[in-house]
Image (cartoon, rainbow over all chains, first blue to last red; front, side, top):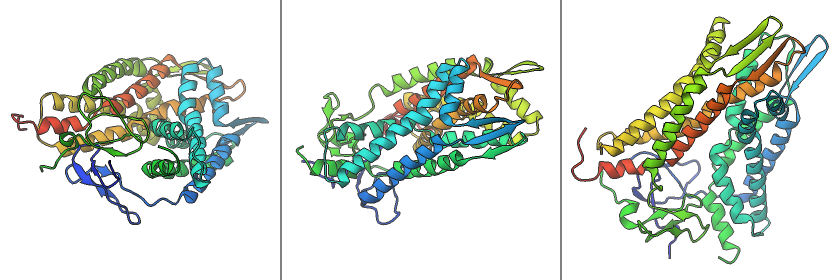
Length: 204
Length: 211
């Protein structure tokens, strides 16, 4: 039977190490190649659930409110991400709209929803059948969440339109900043610990 | 440094749930007890798949930079911008910092990613034994930087929405934008399919050439 104390191979060079438990903000690195090694981290699930719920709220603010507004001679232009995706689709470039929509909108939405679901289930002591597929989906989606890249794009666009008349930064921008920070934090979560808890509460 | 490797002992950490399993064979297909994820000593056909993605990404790089990425319609006329002409326009307009960011994200980084992965693949093929640690650092950098090339796509989407001054200007993505998006996705998949452990395997085999 394998236990958590079994030697762990480095993901970059395969050298075996003993998996260590992190104290505070410790990090572990491979002795051979220097790559970051996964560590066992004490996980307080309610804290992480709170972060996931906060991320959900940030997501709603980021996409429900305009990121920027422009006023010109009585004309209002309000830019939200869904609105911008629709405008791109309408302008005839559906593939671009789909690609951007998946990476900046749909995948982050699914990830946050699944994180709330999995953390919420485990915190309340439940182990629904959908728990395992949900955890696998979060892992699979991870490289394709690009909220932080989108935020940089917003900052670049805002800087580019700096000289334009009556440019107003709106709540959506604050929402995206918050969302970026929260999603980055959530991605550092020790998923192994989640799997362990998922294992402990139900039949194997 | 000679440390035991997971491969020697058939030890694999599940890529999905991190559970460590012993006794994984090179040919048998094993599934993780805990999550059902597939356990392999090395990524399946890593070298072949990575080359395939790289070649496809290179084929997409050319139209991405040569075809227009943005069309701007104003009362004064139409303008089709490629990545390069857009950078020049930013530069001429005084925004040299934006020009630099776009140049890095859209021209330099994708090309550098493709070039670096190609070099890393060749280092496996020719069994280089030196600078393994640096090559691993390079791989992790390439892997990390991948999503940031999507910057251009997001900027285009935002510009389409923002530059909607009624009857003053209209912006449309060009065909180059689709090729550009495809290139970013393909380079990311190339980095994901590459297995850096193969470099260490090749470096430690007897008879490898010293560099």
